[in-house]
Length: 252
Image (cartoon, rainbow, N blue to C red; front, side, top):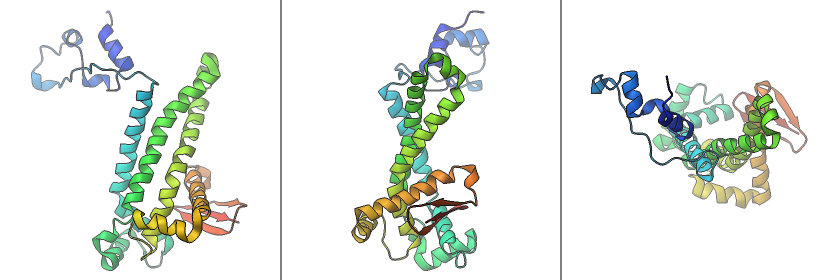
């Protein structure tokens, strides 16, 4: 049976899954044309195509990551607020249920959404970097390796692309993450991003804020590594203790 050239062209270039649409010829060949209209939903194939690894392609991946990451993290801000406070004061916030109760009693419904602005901005930037830059670095390292080595070391190349994108994405996230944690865990510190960011820079200076962001970067990056779970990681930079999830970092 001859392959449908239209379907092949669509599946190679379209960003939409091929099962969402079909050409009329393939429908006839597969018997869908004679079926009832309600048995299959067919969407017309898009006329305009986004060329793979073009500027539009990277932009589309970045926007997709921005929407997927920023909106989802913002939606679960109440859970994040409870989680952060449980890590800072486990005696007061003993569980998720009691944590919600304490926050509602002391700060009201607004307390559950503290830090939503830096969460939205920070994780949107991170998502754009993760998705967009991953595709960029994947293509970049593949071109450097060449066809033969790219096929042989495909997993390593994709891993390198993912790691490169993750580091840059986390750098974009860290300043907003530093503000978010302060706003969520220090009552009376600030109402949100608008007054929290200038307050941190004023009290600690740009260098101090930069270093605090670097600490957050260590936490975020090493949290992704399975061997750092409940593991004390030592870095010879400064003294302090950073808590994030099940990861504990002793900064000497």
